[in-house]
Length: 259
Image (cartoon, rainbow, N blue to C red; front, side):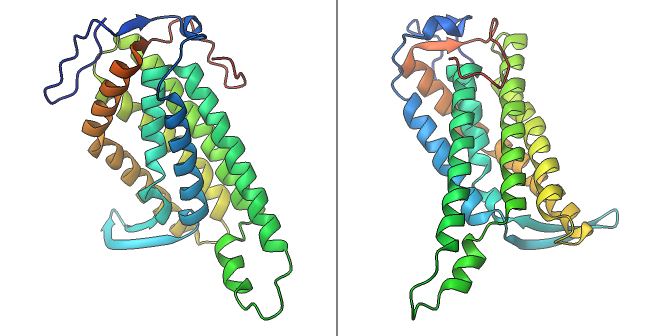
């Protein structure tokens, strides 16, 4: 089964790419770039959660049906890249290996939150006047940490599940439908959990709703805009790894680390 070709001229009929319907067959396979993809995923996840999640930003303002749009969480400029990498991981390496990456990201976010709490709580040295600013930037509340972890976990697994099931159902055709369709579901789950749980009662209800809807739309549009890049990365990795994984017999439980 040839891989789904990108929209610009890349020859996809490579005999070196083997279709694999049972990912368990690859337990002894040595992947060249899986570890790098995992590292990139975790790095983007930590940075987008630590730096941008709690800051609302605004480039424009528009009204539609009585709603004012334009505010968005600053982290969404980079956080959707984790979903794009999640799509690439599921498409190239299969759901089971993507699941391991999600759990690695989950553990990394928990450690980031714990380290932030410890460092902020340490008494500052005499004469250092940066503690208030440090607390404002890195003093993540338990509520935001809980919202972030829950939203990430549920959204990423929803994204990977939809991506893998759509690939099997379509026989590997129309990669763009899988990447955008899985993002619509995964980002929807993520946004519906994170913003109300993290900021309802802190921000006004209208601000929470505005940021949630604006973020969701921007994330989906961002994914669609980067579809050609996703095609090229997927095609490159499939050629480099020599496999095209279909999750026909995969156990989709999120509570397993088996690959």
